[in-house]
Length: 341
Length: 241
Image 1: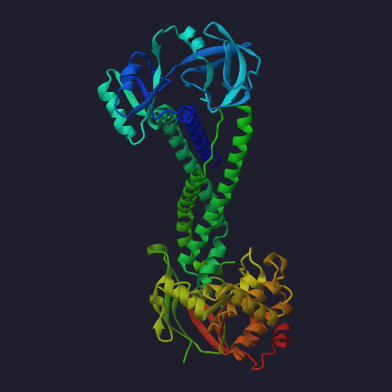
Image 2 (image 1 turned 180 degrees about the vertical axis):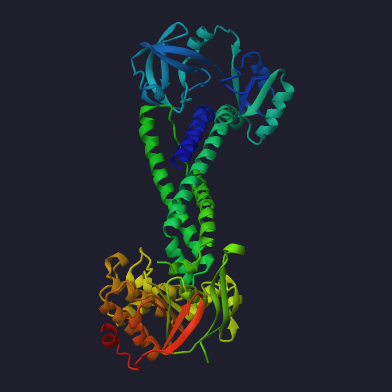
């Protein structure tokens, strides 16, 4: 149970974390280079000249460029993988989701990094990325990418690193009131050449899909293993108990209990064993999530009520399955055996 | 009218050359108020006969009629219902459920028959009080003496007012005084409550309590004689000498 809950919590935690910042960006539609699906594996580069074409599309209320780039960084010998976003003060684009310490916006030579890196660095530390040195002036939250994190610098700082004049990575589009977002997406795709557009939620999903695609099959296999182990443990426990108590079951048969009534006893025992195991497992999973998470930042466990409920349902199903073999044993107990002393 | 009419019972265990005839043509009528003692050497078929009469085992051949109905032909569920309503069992090794208290053990047949738990426990308490176990209600079997365990077993056997009580070596694990207590109980069930009692035992002292004494050898009923039963059931005096 612990294994299943922890894995499900990790999956949920990672999925939510990776999409958290993208979901917080104020945009109805993300416009990107054709063929670019997500920020991490298929980056996008667009000409700023396309901004005017997109602005003309029916239903577009506003548009802002959004630049970001993945960079290897280092601070006092500690390596970090950062996804550096350009804060564009003029366009009010590329702000952190929220700042929990230090300055809220980066100035020249400054960087705000995600609080998930706070075990490695502190405010005031120097950090080197792409040969440029930055001073950490703030900690933001909501930008944890598990294996990396979002960081924020002034737009001209990222421009100097990227050296792509007249280019940006994405456009953030807002839709006029009364227009369907899907319709505007289609309008952009049909009216502007070589760009792709997706609604904001879909873009966030495209980024979390990386986790789902890589993590879900592993979770599925491990959950199957967990279920098999659970059935074996509950089954063995109940089977052993049934064998130990087979004489008492024989007595109950002799007294007049029907097989169905005895099966109910065994199923109740199996369900009780399952629920107790589930309770202990869930408790352990919560404790593990808190304790391990405080030492290992990548251990982001989000245990949802819905997940707890389906795992409980799975436990109950496992318990009933586990009762089958003991029940078969019970069916063959001869009540006349009770006369043997 | 007889409680049980067993006719030409045959029970064969195994097949072919390894087949063993445990019961060989036994017929027996059991009437209300009877106290029948079945005796015989070990392996003679006493317990097998008791199991067949008590519907715990089906005969290979023959009939066991209860109120004119052949119980040998009933389904497992029908037999279970029958045992619950009509029969009470007392075993040599008591066979109480180890995790339940004396009161709960005595209440099992009542609850199985559908009585609400509270009422069943109340009736079990009253029954145990009659058997001088009123202060042992909450004790687990491991905390009871042999005699107390057998009295709890008797309370369980009598719970559903059975027509027939089947006892297998009920005094074998008891000292003379406690054995007498248990026999007085069985005697009283037959004489005062008109229940039939069938006892399988090696204990010859039980002849003093029995109304009929049946001897079985090699699965055959070889002798039936009158017991020395006294209608007033003065068991202790007779049993203890």
